[in-house]
Length: 452
Image (cartoon, rainbow, N blue to C red; front, top):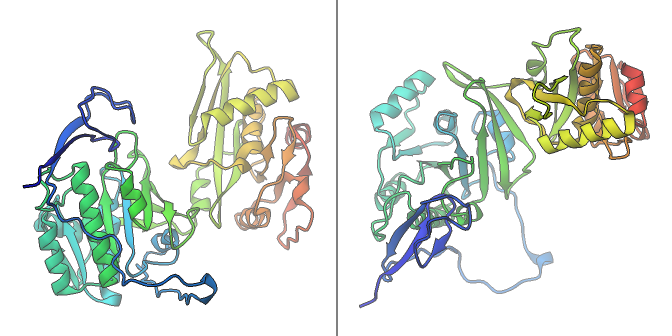
């Protein structure tokens, strides 16, 4: 008789060890190792559910684009790359209460009306609880089937019986295989359950969406192999204090990982934000120092955001940099450039930088706007509210070119901006029909001189 294998697995990051450890060497958390027992006789699902084939030259391989299923939520389809691909497995994670179940119920309702039966499996809520949420969202499709089940064998039986066009598993940590002795949510159960669902999706050509829990750091809970197994990984981002939610792709085998979807959480559910730029700058106060409108590219979409800076004398003799929505290390770099190249005396001041609306921007195209906002606050001089600032700042104080300058400027002109401070090197080959005054600058001196 085969013996059972024993190992200790970290419940935060999935790191395994043959003995118990007080502190995980992977995530460095304390007391996260638990013992897991796996029977050697357990049948592992085959991860490749395709017939055997011979190697062939890539030039002779026939390729065809699969017809995607549109969810009826354009922002969701944008992040997926144009819709749900049949046979794909999508993993979506996010903080509790962020809106994962809400958007999936809304998408399931739309898909069931257009393509047929959809199976929504809730392993953490009863059917009655799911129905209450559906009532709040106005979901009334007869083709949307709800199932409260944790056994993966029973779920597979219902999938075979219904043959739906989409399956939603909410969540992967709640389901389990009876052949494993580990508890639901353990690393072994999550790994094997996901592998089993992957085989079902590929063999039956049914798209499956998995909901995943997140750790305290915001990353998906369970083994890292889970993200490698699935085709697409999405994250729902947002703060509970803000009504905006951002859906972002960090992995997508069928589309770009640079696109984002923006939603607004209302009483009737998640509502798409059709024009996020106008929304994010709608509450901007004019004639306020330290406030600058910048342009950030999120995939193919330019977003206009209000960036605020506040420079004040340090009260404790130890100046600090505090940021919200931007990288703090990048702010420290820009402050150093302003002090060294421009002579801005803010070495003993506290610097606070914030992007309004709960948004986050990490691209270098907002560098120049950030530097202008810090200088504006320090000198207490307001920036023209109809001026947009675009550009990357180098360590030498030079303003470098950014990508998609035409899209950024067109979006700014549509929203009523009549002046743009942008890199002079971006002017070459730029053809713009919009009525906007273009001021090209080569360095921070030129930008500050044009604005302050």
